[in-house]
Image (tube, rainbow, N blue to C red; front, side, top):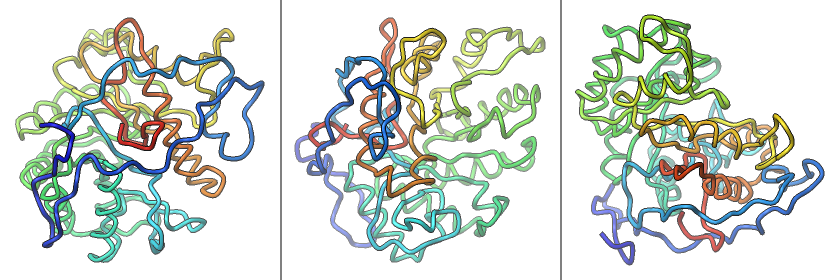
Amino acid sequence: MSSAGSLLALRSGGRPPIAWPPPPREALPPFPSPTAGQPSGPQASCWTFDPVDYGLPFTPPDHPTVDFHRGNFSGHRVPGLPYVPGCTENDPSLLYTWFLYEYSREWQERILDSYQSCGYTHISFHRADWMGVVDGVPGCSRETALDLVRRCRDRGLYVVVNLAIDGQPTPEELTPWIADLAGAGMAIGCLAWQINQLLAWPDIFDYIDWVCPAIAAAGCKRAIHWSLDACAVWPSAKFNVWSRRDFQQWTADKIEYVYQQFNTEMPLLDMRPHAGGLIGEQQDVLKTLAGQKLVVAEDDAQAEFDDPAGRPELYGDLKGRCLMATSYDGHWCEGGYLNGARQPDGSVL
């Protein structure tokens, strides 16, 4: 399917189809020049100690595809958006897709229109929010959650659902949810968001071992999200995992996508010893992958939440674009992004 004039075939609520790719958005600011320290203002989101080659080491797909994530779970602004619990009162227009169910049906449709107009093809939801286990965030019924997944699927979006909630997941509780979500249109089951903080160790290995086949059996792909640059846990004598490389080999047939989170204040590149910056962290992951695709999943979300006026979406997208330029020995971030990005001229990445 060619990108020129291609359309998402499905409609929602009688609306016209969403054009893909959409017209370019606002052009990005210039790529950052080396600086002696983190600058103030919006440049604080995207800065570097050392010169960086910002050329992309790959050609992004010219059409929507499940394997190349294009999304922004936290960072897209929708003017006039009312405040809902879980979002920031300092800027209610800052969208968190996890909380989409909290808005009125009319606002949900307006949000999805705006989201897709950016060229985003993947949308992330959080089962813990639906279940009402997140402090201060109201839950919703199972059918409400499934209806939202169906409507996003019918718009042509690839739906990602973060599956685990607090405590060690059990097949009895989670497997029926996986079946229902797959039937509603879940494309990717993310085992957990910040899995290395959310779940107990070493039981995390047992969870991965049983849940990945269950997700695949339901016809969905599988992802795993890590807190900061961990991207693996070890050791496990039971599964013969003694290093990060062992872990990636062990999960090679279990997980398609590795979602990475970053320290939002770090520079893109820092060549000083033991401080490689975000690009160095990505390279550490890329060098151990065994066929999984690396997704730049969370690189500016917390900073934008804490200071939405000083950390605008535009610079978050610049940061995402810069990080997509990371490569190591022929490997790159071919899984795409989930916290925003665009090309320098504002067009879809």
